[in-house]
Image (cartoon, rainbow, N blue to C red):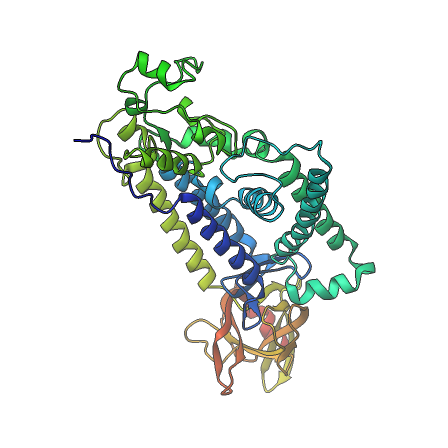
Length: 481
Protein backbone atom coordinates (compact mmCIF):
# COMPACT_ATOMS: atom_id res chain seq x y z
CA UNK A 1 0.00 0.00 0.00
CA UNK A 2 1.32 3.43 -0.91
CA UNK A 3 2.04 5.73 2.04
CA UNK A 4 2.22 8.82 -0.13
CA UNK A 5 -0.20 11.45 1.07
CA UNK A 6 -2.75 12.99 -1.28
CA UNK A 7 -2.32 16.72 -2.02
CA UNK A 8 -4.40 18.97 0.20
CA UNK A 9 -6.95 21.36 -1.22
CA UNK A 10 -5.32 24.79 -1.38
CA UNK A 11 -7.59 27.52 0.09
CA UNK A 12 -7.92 30.96 -1.47
CA UNK A 13 -4.52 32.64 -1.04
CA UNK A 14 -4.26 35.49 1.42
CA UNK A 15 -2.80 37.51 -1.44
CA UNK A 16 -6.12 37.48 -3.29
CA UNK A 17 -7.95 38.54 -0.14
CA UNK A 18 -5.53 41.45 0.18
CA UNK A 19 -6.25 42.40 -3.43
CA UNK A 20 -9.97 42.51 -2.62
CA UNK A 21 -9.22 44.62 0.44
CA UNK A 22 -7.06 47.01 -1.58
CA UNK A 23 -9.72 47.30 -4.28
CA UNK A 24 -12.39 48.13 -1.72
CA UNK A 25 -10.10 50.67 0.03
CA UNK A 26 -9.25 52.34 -3.29
CA UNK A 27 -12.86 52.66 -4.42
CA UNK A 28 -13.96 53.80 -0.96
CA UNK A 29 -11.35 56.58 -0.68
CA UNK A 30 -11.94 57.76 -4.25
CA UNK A 31 -15.73 57.89 -3.92
CA UNK A 32 -16.09 59.17 -0.32
CA UNK A 33 -15.02 62.81 -0.99
CA UNK A 34 -17.77 63.11 -3.64
CA UNK A 35 -20.58 62.06 -1.31
CA UNK A 36 -22.41 64.90 0.41
CA UNK A 37 -25.53 65.20 2.53
CA UNK A 38 -27.15 68.61 2.96
CA UNK A 39 -24.01 70.07 1.41
CA UNK A 40 -21.74 68.44 4.02
CA UNK A 41 -19.06 65.77 3.56
CA UNK A 42 -18.41 62.69 5.66
CA UNK A 43 -14.93 64.02 6.49
CA UNK A 44 -13.44 67.31 5.39
CA UNK A 45 -10.89 69.46 7.18
CA UNK A 46 -10.98 72.69 5.20
CA UNK A 47 -8.28 75.18 6.12
CA UNK A 48 -9.50 77.36 3.26
CA UNK A 49 -13.00 77.83 4.68
CA UNK A 50 -12.07 77.03 8.29
CA UNK A 51 -14.57 74.20 8.51
CA UNK A 52 -14.62 70.63 9.74
CA UNK A 53 -17.13 68.18 8.30
CA UNK A 54 -17.57 65.00 10.30
CA UNK A 55 -20.27 62.43 9.72
CA UNK A 56 -22.04 64.85 7.32
CA UNK A 57 -22.23 67.49 10.07
CA UNK A 58 -20.43 70.80 9.64
CA UNK A 59 -18.36 72.25 12.47
CA UNK A 60 -16.64 75.59 12.74
CA UNK A 61 -12.91 75.79 13.44
CA UNK A 62 -13.82 76.96 16.94
CA UNK A 63 -15.20 73.44 17.43
CA UNK A 64 -11.95 71.66 16.62
CA UNK A 65 -11.96 70.17 20.11
CA UNK A 66 -13.26 67.11 18.23
CA UNK A 67 -9.95 66.55 16.42
CA UNK A 68 -8.01 65.15 19.42
CA UNK A 69 -10.75 62.55 19.87
CA UNK A 70 -10.52 61.63 16.18
CA UNK A 71 -6.75 61.23 16.46
CA UNK A 72 -7.09 59.15 19.61
CA UNK A 73 -9.66 56.99 17.86
CA UNK A 74 -7.34 56.46 14.89
CA UNK A 75 -4.24 55.61 16.92
CA UNK A 76 -6.09 53.38 19.38
CA UNK A 77 -7.62 51.49 16.45
CA UNK A 78 -4.19 50.90 14.90
CA UNK A 79 -2.63 49.94 18.24
CA UNK A 80 -5.56 47.64 19.01
CA UNK A 81 -5.18 45.97 15.61
CA UNK A 82 -1.48 45.44 16.38
CA UNK A 83 -2.15 43.86 19.76
CA UNK A 84 -4.54 41.39 18.12
CA UNK A 85 -3.04 40.82 14.68
CA UNK A 86 0.51 42.19 14.63
CA UNK A 87 1.34 44.50 11.74
CA UNK A 88 -1.88 43.60 9.98
CA UNK A 89 -2.46 47.32 9.37
CA UNK A 90 0.80 47.49 7.42
CA UNK A 91 0.05 44.51 5.22
CA UNK A 92 -3.65 45.06 4.63
CA UNK A 93 -4.57 48.73 5.10
CA UNK A 94 -1.46 50.93 4.79
CA UNK A 95 -1.51 53.08 1.61
CA UNK A 96 2.23 52.55 1.10
CA UNK A 97 1.73 48.79 0.86
CA UNK A 98 -1.20 49.28 -1.51
CA UNK A 99 0.88 51.52 -3.80
CA UNK A 100 3.74 49.02 -3.79
CA UNK A 101 1.43 46.13 -4.69
CA UNK A 102 -0.11 48.11 -7.54
CA UNK A 103 3.31 49.15 -8.85
CA UNK A 104 5.19 45.87 -8.41
CA UNK A 105 2.50 43.19 -8.88
CA UNK A 106 0.19 44.93 -11.34
CA UNK A 107 2.26 47.38 -13.38
CA UNK A 108 5.71 45.79 -13.39
CA UNK A 109 4.65 42.12 -13.38
CA UNK A 110 1.18 41.71 -14.90
CA UNK A 111 1.05 44.61 -17.37
CA UNK A 112 4.64 45.20 -18.50
CA UNK A 113 6.12 41.75 -17.71
CA UNK A 114 9.20 43.51 -16.33
CA UNK A 115 9.23 41.02 -13.47
CA UNK A 116 8.76 37.38 -14.36
CA UNK A 117 6.65 36.17 -11.42
CA UNK A 118 4.68 37.70 -8.58
CA UNK A 119 5.94 34.90 -6.34
CA UNK A 120 9.56 35.99 -6.74
CA UNK A 121 10.03 39.42 -5.24
CA UNK A 122 13.73 39.03 -4.51
CA UNK A 123 14.98 38.97 -8.09
CA UNK A 124 15.15 42.48 -9.51
CA UNK A 125 14.80 43.00 -13.28
CA UNK A 126 17.98 43.08 -15.36
CA UNK A 127 18.27 46.80 -16.09
CA UNK A 128 21.21 46.33 -18.50
CA UNK A 129 18.73 45.33 -21.20
CA UNK A 130 17.33 48.14 -23.34
CA UNK A 131 13.88 46.54 -23.38
CA UNK A 132 13.75 46.52 -19.57
CA UNK A 133 14.91 50.14 -19.41
CA UNK A 134 12.01 51.14 -21.68
CA UNK A 135 9.55 49.11 -19.59
CA UNK A 136 10.93 50.70 -16.41
CA UNK A 137 10.42 54.17 -17.89
CA UNK A 138 6.84 53.27 -18.85
CA UNK A 139 6.25 51.90 -15.34
CA UNK A 140 7.49 55.18 -13.84
CA UNK A 141 5.23 57.17 -16.17
CA UNK A 142 2.18 55.12 -15.18
CA UNK A 143 3.16 55.43 -11.50
CA UNK A 144 3.52 59.20 -11.90
CA UNK A 145 0.02 59.49 -13.42
CA UNK A 146 -1.51 57.31 -10.71
CA UNK A 147 0.36 59.30 -8.06
CA UNK A 148 -1.32 62.47 -9.28
CA UNK A 149 -4.71 60.78 -8.87
CA UNK A 150 -3.73 59.60 -5.38
CA UNK A 151 -2.42 63.08 -4.47
CA UNK A 152 -5.65 64.69 -5.67
CA UNK A 153 -7.69 62.14 -3.71
CA UNK A 154 -5.71 62.91 -0.56
CA UNK A 155 -6.21 66.66 -1.01
CA UNK A 156 -9.97 66.20 -1.52
CA UNK A 157 -10.24 65.58 2.21
CA UNK A 158 -8.90 69.13 2.72
CA UNK A 159 -10.14 70.87 -0.44
CA UNK A 160 -13.42 69.26 -1.60
CA UNK A 161 -13.81 68.31 -5.27
CA UNK A 162 -16.36 71.08 -5.86
CA UNK A 163 -13.62 73.60 -4.99
CA UNK A 164 -10.57 71.59 -6.07
CA UNK A 165 -11.14 71.68 -9.82
CA UNK A 166 -12.12 75.38 -10.02
CA UNK A 167 -8.97 76.13 -8.00
CA UNK A 168 -6.88 74.17 -10.51
CA UNK A 169 -8.46 76.13 -13.36
CA UNK A 170 -7.57 79.34 -11.52
CA UNK A 171 -4.00 78.11 -11.05
CA UNK A 172 -2.45 81.59 -10.85
CA UNK A 173 -4.15 82.17 -7.47
CA UNK A 174 -3.71 78.66 -6.09
CA UNK A 175 -0.04 77.80 -6.41
CA UNK A 176 0.00 76.32 -2.90
CA UNK A 177 -2.57 73.71 -3.86
CA UNK A 178 -0.79 72.84 -7.09
CA UNK A 179 2.58 72.72 -5.36
CA UNK A 180 1.20 70.40 -2.67
CA UNK A 181 -0.25 68.05 -5.27
CA UNK A 182 3.00 67.91 -7.26
CA UNK A 183 5.08 67.39 -4.09
CA UNK A 184 2.84 64.54 -2.92
CA UNK A 185 2.91 62.89 -6.35
CA UNK A 186 6.71 63.10 -6.56
CA UNK A 187 7.09 61.66 -3.08
CA UNK A 188 4.77 58.77 -3.95
CA UNK A 189 6.78 57.95 -7.10
CA UNK A 190 10.03 58.04 -5.11
CA UNK A 191 8.49 55.93 -2.37
CA UNK A 192 6.95 53.18 -4.49
CA UNK A 193 9.61 52.99 -7.22
CA UNK A 194 12.87 53.70 -5.39
CA UNK A 195 12.48 53.63 -1.60
CA UNK A 196 10.22 50.56 -1.79
CA UNK A 197 9.86 48.43 1.36
CA UNK A 198 12.80 50.25 2.94
CA UNK A 199 10.13 52.73 4.00
CA UNK A 200 8.49 50.00 6.12
CA UNK A 201 11.76 48.84 7.65
CA UNK A 202 13.67 52.08 8.20
CA UNK A 203 11.40 55.12 7.83
CA UNK A 204 8.02 54.22 9.29
CA UNK A 205 8.07 54.71 13.10
CA UNK A 206 5.28 52.16 13.51
CA UNK A 207 7.72 49.27 13.04
CA UNK A 208 9.58 50.45 16.16
CA UNK A 209 6.40 50.79 18.20
CA UNK A 210 5.01 47.35 17.39
CA UNK A 211 7.40 45.40 19.62
CA UNK A 212 6.02 47.23 22.67
CA UNK A 213 2.46 46.22 21.74
CA UNK A 214 3.08 42.53 21.04
CA UNK A 215 2.43 39.80 23.58
CA UNK A 216 2.48 35.99 23.40
CA UNK A 217 -1.07 35.89 22.02
CA UNK A 218 -0.51 38.42 19.21
CA UNK A 219 -1.33 36.78 15.89
CA UNK A 220 1.37 37.04 13.18
CA UNK A 221 3.04 35.04 10.43
CA UNK A 222 5.03 32.33 12.23
CA UNK A 223 7.22 29.44 11.13
CA UNK A 224 6.57 26.26 13.13
CA UNK A 225 10.01 25.10 14.23
CA UNK A 226 8.54 22.04 15.94
CA UNK A 227 7.44 20.66 12.60
CA UNK A 228 9.78 22.33 10.14
CA UNK A 229 13.00 22.20 12.13
CA UNK A 230 15.42 24.91 13.24
CA UNK A 231 16.87 26.47 10.11
CA UNK A 232 18.62 29.17 12.17
CA UNK A 233 20.45 29.01 15.47
CA UNK A 234 19.85 31.29 18.46
CA UNK A 235 22.13 33.97 17.00
CA UNK A 236 20.15 33.93 13.72
CA UNK A 237 22.91 32.26 11.75
CA UNK A 238 21.75 29.77 9.13
CA UNK A 239 22.36 26.14 10.03
CA UNK A 240 21.11 24.45 6.88
CA UNK A 241 20.59 25.30 3.22
CA UNK A 242 19.63 21.83 1.98
CA UNK A 243 16.86 19.51 3.12
CA UNK A 244 19.13 16.48 3.44
CA UNK A 245 21.43 18.35 5.83
CA UNK A 246 18.47 19.48 7.91
CA UNK A 247 16.98 15.99 8.10
CA UNK A 248 20.37 14.49 8.96
CA UNK A 249 20.34 16.70 12.05
CA UNK A 250 16.55 16.62 12.64
CA UNK A 251 15.06 13.50 11.00
CA UNK A 252 11.46 14.59 11.55
CA UNK A 253 11.94 18.08 10.09
CA UNK A 254 9.37 18.75 7.36
CA UNK A 255 10.85 21.92 5.82
CA UNK A 256 11.89 21.26 2.20
CA UNK A 257 14.30 24.26 2.24
CA UNK A 258 12.67 25.34 -1.03
CA UNK A 259 12.76 28.93 0.26
CA UNK A 260 9.50 29.81 -1.49
CA UNK A 261 8.57 31.71 1.68
CA UNK A 262 11.77 33.75 1.28
CA UNK A 263 11.59 34.61 -2.41
CA UNK A 264 7.97 35.80 -2.13
CA UNK A 265 8.62 38.16 0.82
CA UNK A 266 8.29 41.84 -0.21
CA UNK A 267 10.44 43.03 2.72
CA UNK A 268 13.24 40.54 1.95
CA UNK A 269 13.24 38.59 5.19
CA UNK A 270 13.30 34.89 6.01
CA UNK A 271 10.27 34.13 8.17
CA UNK A 272 12.01 30.98 9.46
CA UNK A 273 14.37 33.22 11.42
CA UNK A 274 11.55 34.23 13.78
CA UNK A 275 9.87 37.56 14.57
CA UNK A 276 11.42 40.49 12.69
CA UNK A 277 10.26 44.08 12.70
CA UNK A 278 10.38 44.19 8.88
CA UNK A 279 7.49 41.68 8.67
CA UNK A 280 4.31 43.47 7.61
CA UNK A 281 1.96 40.46 8.01
CA UNK A 282 1.13 40.36 4.31
CA UNK A 283 0.97 36.55 4.71
CA UNK A 284 2.50 35.87 1.28
CA UNK A 285 4.93 33.47 3.00
CA UNK A 286 1.90 31.60 4.35
CA UNK A 287 0.52 31.28 0.81
CA UNK A 288 3.87 30.07 -0.52
CA UNK A 289 4.33 27.39 2.14
CA UNK A 290 0.68 26.34 1.93
CA UNK A 291 1.12 25.64 -1.79
CA UNK A 292 4.38 23.67 -1.38
CA UNK A 293 3.33 21.64 1.66
CA UNK A 294 -0.17 21.13 0.24
CA UNK A 295 1.30 19.25 -2.70
CA UNK A 296 2.94 16.93 -0.16
CA UNK A 297 -0.37 16.43 1.63
CA UNK A 298 0.74 18.42 4.68
CA UNK A 299 -0.48 21.66 6.28
CA UNK A 300 1.63 24.80 5.95
CA UNK A 301 4.68 25.24 8.17
CA UNK A 302 4.08 29.01 8.16
CA UNK A 303 0.77 30.04 9.67
CA UNK A 304 -0.99 33.13 10.93
CA UNK A 305 -1.01 32.31 14.61
CA UNK A 306 0.60 33.25 17.93
CA UNK A 307 3.73 32.30 19.86
CA UNK A 308 1.48 30.89 22.57
CA UNK A 309 -0.08 28.39 20.16
CA UNK A 310 2.72 27.58 17.67
CA UNK A 311 6.08 28.13 19.38
CA UNK A 312 5.29 27.60 23.07
CA UNK A 313 2.46 25.15 22.31
CA UNK A 314 0.58 26.02 25.49
CA UNK A 315 -2.90 25.97 23.95
CA UNK A 316 -5.19 28.03 21.74
CA UNK A 317 -4.65 31.73 21.13
CA UNK A 318 -6.66 33.92 23.52
CA UNK A 319 -8.21 36.81 21.65
CA UNK A 320 -10.43 38.20 24.42
CA UNK A 321 -7.66 38.95 26.88
CA UNK A 322 -7.47 41.95 29.28
CA UNK A 323 -5.29 44.08 26.98
CA UNK A 324 -7.63 43.61 24.02
CA UNK A 325 -10.71 44.29 26.16
CA UNK A 326 -9.07 47.46 27.48
CA UNK A 327 -8.50 48.73 23.93
CA UNK A 328 -12.06 47.81 22.99
CA UNK A 329 -13.43 49.68 26.03
CA UNK A 330 -11.35 52.76 25.20
CA UNK A 331 -12.50 52.71 21.57
CA UNK A 332 -16.15 52.38 22.57
CA UNK A 333 -15.77 55.13 25.18
CA UNK A 334 -14.12 57.59 22.81
CA UNK A 335 -16.63 56.78 20.07
CA UNK A 336 -19.51 57.49 22.47
CA UNK A 337 -17.90 60.76 23.61
CA UNK A 338 -17.27 61.78 20.00
CA UNK A 339 -20.82 60.91 19.02
CA UNK A 340 -22.23 62.83 21.97
CA UNK A 341 -20.08 65.90 21.31
CA UNK A 342 -20.88 65.78 17.61
CA UNK A 343 -24.58 65.33 18.34
CA UNK A 344 -24.67 68.41 20.58
CA UNK A 345 -23.13 70.61 17.90
CA UNK A 346 -24.46 74.16 17.89
CA UNK A 347 -25.61 75.30 14.46
CA UNK A 348 -24.85 78.91 15.29
CA UNK A 349 -21.97 80.39 17.23
CA UNK A 350 -22.73 83.17 19.69
CA UNK A 351 -20.46 85.03 22.07
CA UNK A 352 -21.93 87.66 24.39
CA UNK A 353 -19.75 90.26 26.09
CA UNK A 354 -21.08 93.03 28.29
CA UNK A 355 -19.96 96.58 27.54
CA UNK A 356 -17.67 98.36 30.00
CA UNK A 357 -20.47 100.65 31.18
CA UNK A 358 -22.59 98.77 33.68
CA UNK A 359 -25.86 100.45 32.75
CA UNK A 360 -27.52 103.67 31.67
CA UNK A 361 -30.61 105.24 33.22
CA UNK A 362 -33.28 107.74 32.11
CA UNK A 363 -36.45 109.15 33.65
CA UNK A 364 -39.39 108.52 31.32
CA UNK A 365 -42.15 110.20 33.32
CA UNK A 366 -44.87 109.08 35.66
CA UNK A 367 -42.23 108.23 38.25
CA UNK A 368 -40.66 105.55 36.07
CA UNK A 369 -37.00 105.05 35.30
CA UNK A 370 -35.66 103.19 32.30
CA UNK A 371 -32.57 101.02 32.86
CA UNK A 372 -30.52 99.89 29.86
CA UNK A 373 -27.70 97.32 29.69
CA UNK A 374 -25.71 97.03 26.46
CA UNK A 375 -23.90 93.96 25.11
CA UNK A 376 -21.72 93.03 22.17
CA UNK A 377 -23.08 90.00 20.32
CA UNK A 378 -20.62 88.19 18.05
CA UNK A 379 -22.63 85.82 15.87
CA UNK A 380 -21.70 83.32 13.18
CA UNK A 381 -24.04 81.29 11.03
CA UNK A 382 -22.49 77.80 10.64
CA UNK A 383 -25.22 76.52 8.31
CA UNK A 384 -24.95 76.47 4.51
CA UNK A 385 -27.82 78.86 3.97
CA UNK A 386 -28.77 82.42 4.83
CA UNK A 387 -30.73 82.62 8.08
CA UNK A 388 -32.54 85.14 10.27
CA UNK A 389 -31.85 84.86 13.97
CA UNK A 390 -34.19 85.95 16.73
CA UNK A 391 -33.39 86.61 20.38
CA UNK A 392 -35.32 86.59 23.62
CA UNK A 393 -34.43 87.12 27.26
CA UNK A 394 -35.11 84.48 29.88
CA UNK A 395 -34.90 86.24 33.30
CA UNK A 396 -35.04 84.59 36.74
CA UNK A 397 -38.32 83.33 38.09
CA UNK A 398 -40.61 86.19 39.09
CA UNK A 399 -39.14 88.63 36.52
CA UNK A 400 -40.74 87.12 33.41
CA UNK A 401 -41.50 89.75 30.78
CA UNK A 402 -39.82 92.58 32.72
CA UNK A 403 -36.49 92.57 30.83
CA UNK A 404 -36.84 92.96 27.06
CA UNK A 405 -34.63 93.52 24.03
CA UNK A 406 -34.85 97.18 23.07
CA UNK A 407 -32.34 97.22 20.20
CA UNK A 408 -32.18 96.00 17.51
CA UNK A 409 -35.87 95.79 16.79
CA UNK A 410 -35.47 93.45 13.79
CA UNK A 411 -33.96 89.94 13.63
CA UNK A 412 -30.33 89.42 12.66
CA UNK A 413 -29.72 88.30 9.09
CA UNK A 414 -26.52 86.26 8.79
CA UNK A 415 -24.89 84.74 5.72
CA UNK A 416 -23.16 81.33 5.98
CA UNK A 417 -19.72 81.45 7.57
CA UNK A 418 -19.78 85.25 8.08
CA UNK A 419 -19.15 86.66 11.55
CA UNK A 420 -21.49 89.47 12.51
CA UNK A 421 -21.08 91.96 15.34
CA UNK A 422 -24.09 93.69 16.86
CA UNK A 423 -24.71 95.97 19.82
CA UNK A 424 -27.74 94.70 21.70
CA UNK A 425 -29.54 96.68 24.38
CA UNK A 426 -31.66 95.07 27.07
CA UNK A 427 -34.17 97.30 28.84
CA UNK A 428 -36.52 97.37 31.76
CA UNK A 429 -38.89 100.00 33.06
CA UNK A 430 -39.99 97.90 36.00
CA UNK A 431 -38.57 97.99 39.52
CA UNK A 432 -36.71 94.70 39.60
CA UNK A 433 -34.86 95.01 42.94
CA UNK A 434 -34.77 97.53 45.77
CA UNK A 435 -31.30 97.39 47.26
CA UNK A 436 -30.16 100.37 49.35
CA UNK A 437 -26.49 99.39 49.46
CA UNK A 438 -25.32 98.28 45.99
CA UNK A 439 -26.19 97.50 42.42
CA UNK A 440 -27.76 94.09 41.88
CA UNK A 441 -26.43 91.58 39.33
CA UNK A 442 -29.34 89.58 37.93
CA UNK A 443 -28.53 86.32 36.07
CA UNK A 444 -30.28 86.03 32.73
CA UNK A 445 -30.23 83.67 29.77
CA UNK A 446 -30.22 84.79 26.15
CA UNK A 447 -32.06 82.41 23.84
CA UNK A 448 -31.03 82.72 20.19
CA UNK A 449 -32.91 80.76 17.55
CA UNK A 450 -33.97 80.57 13.92
CA UNK A 451 -37.41 79.74 12.57
CA UNK A 452 -38.18 76.42 10.89
CA UNK A 453 -40.09 75.95 7.65
CA UNK A 454 -43.39 76.28 9.54
CA UNK A 455 -42.44 79.62 11.06
CA UNK A 456 -41.95 78.15 14.53
CA UNK A 457 -38.92 78.23 16.78
CA UNK A 458 -36.39 75.77 15.43
CA UNK A 459 -35.41 72.91 17.72
CA UNK A 460 -32.35 72.38 15.53
CA UNK A 461 -30.84 75.87 15.30
CA UNK A 462 -31.01 77.19 18.84
CA UNK A 463 -28.50 78.16 21.53
CA UNK A 464 -28.65 79.40 25.11
CA UNK A 465 -26.06 81.76 26.60
CA UNK A 466 -25.71 82.86 30.22
CA UNK A 467 -25.20 86.56 30.98
CA UNK A 468 -26.12 89.17 33.57
CA UNK A 469 -28.28 92.28 33.82
CA UNK A 470 -27.11 94.98 36.25
CA UNK A 471 -29.87 96.87 38.04
CA UNK A 472 -28.90 100.11 39.92
CA UNK A 473 -29.18 100.49 43.65
CA UNK A 474 -32.26 102.29 45.02
CA UNK A 475 -30.58 105.68 45.55
CA UNK A 476 -29.74 105.96 41.83
CA UNK A 477 -33.33 105.26 40.87
CA UNK A 478 -34.73 107.69 43.45
CA UNK A 479 -32.58 110.58 42.17
CA UNK A 480 -34.17 110.32 38.72
CA UNK A 481 -37.78 110.19 39.85
